[in-house]
Amino acid sequence: MSNNGPKPFSKVIIISIGFMTVMTIGIFVVMSTWVQNCSSRYSETVEILNNFADLAENDIQAILSEDGTKYGTAYTYLQDLYILNDQYQSMKQYNQTHPGNYTQQDFDDVAIEFTSKMRSLIFVVQSTWVYKYGVQQLNVDVANNYTYRGEEYFFIINKWYKTFSPYEEIDSDLKKYVNTSFFQSGDILELPEIKFDKWTYYLYNNLSILEFIGTNNAINFLNSHLGDINLILVNLSLSVTSDYINGYVYLSERTAGIIQDYNNTLITLALAGVLLGFSASFDNKKYRKITMILGLITLFLSIIYFISASGTLSSFADFEATQILKSIEFQFY
Image 1 (tube, one colour):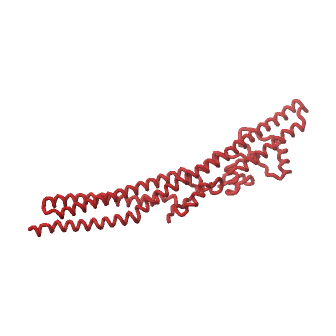
Image 2: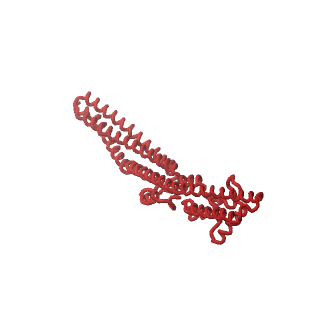
Image 3: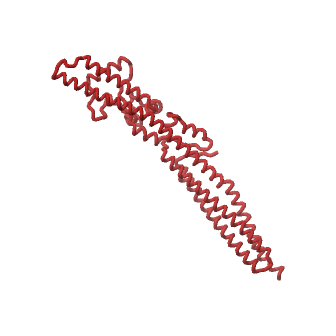
């Protein structure tokens, strides 16, 4: 009896150990060839994107700070021009009731100051990043009314030929003086004003602009990681970049959960193997049976962990393909 008794137990133990061996090998293969690699590259992607976003934010702020200062200077010049225009018109009106009070030299002095400030304003605007980007990359200038994508005065308004403010038109005689001055010098005649709010919006919402202007710290950093990530910058905003970072953080957390479930599976498999091994060492049928039942329960628990990990792995792969990679291209080598 004692020789025939253990045979059913032995079969259960052999089958269980064989099953556990296959599961263990499968888990190690899946974890080493896919999950661990995914977890590692997601963490690396998050780090790269975070660094890029920080550098891009700094580059944008530097551009806006420099252009903002120049915008303020140009706007001050513009207000001075309106004041001089008002002064010129007031002088003309006063001469109508008090003929000869202001001489032509008086008018010329105002016109000279007006022209000088106008040239200074043009110089300041043309030294900005927004002007350089518009002219050099978008091919917009005073000749085509700064038209881009069918919209006139996209980043810059030319106030010389059109009124864009509550102020009156520039006095006709003052315009003639300025026209003559610019014609004689051969300079392009315009009265530019930066649409700073729109420039700010486009900087934050089209990071490809940073490829052409500024310190290029973000672009240089990205180029140094082309082997790890290929990020399409056209129409990519900082807010969307933040969404991608959050998405890859989520993916990293999902892979961490999968790894934890697989580790739990391995632990319970090992415990089940120990319990089943102990059960074979007992001569007492009661102890053998109890230990084997505990081993099988532990084995069942490991199967639950395994199913959970595998189910998460399957849905996770679908999520990665349809949610994160649909709008942004990442290439890993």
